[in-house]
Length: 105
Image 1: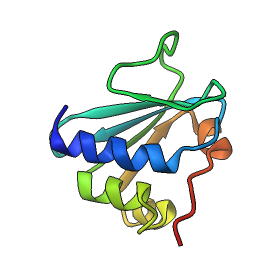
Image 2: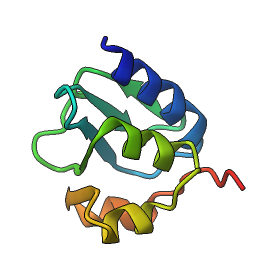
Image 3: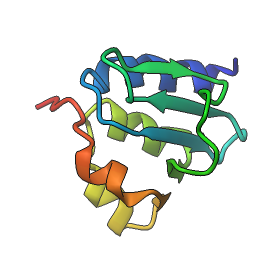
């Protein structure tokens, strides 16, 4: 696991505390690393490998490592990064509607 992926995994573990009935892939454009966040079970699972039975139904976040880290750590709002064009979101938007990211005020 790259150092960027490792720091994203640490931030994701603190952010995704509640299940959200979907799967999210976070892709870092710096080094091509990615994390899968599986919120379909009672405990959110985070790994580098795609969870079973995902196929193509997931939401994808793409951005550079710094932007992804600041969003996941709560230092920057997801909406701000997206409207600034620094975070691209595609795929299953129903996941976004159910997603609850920990608030780090």
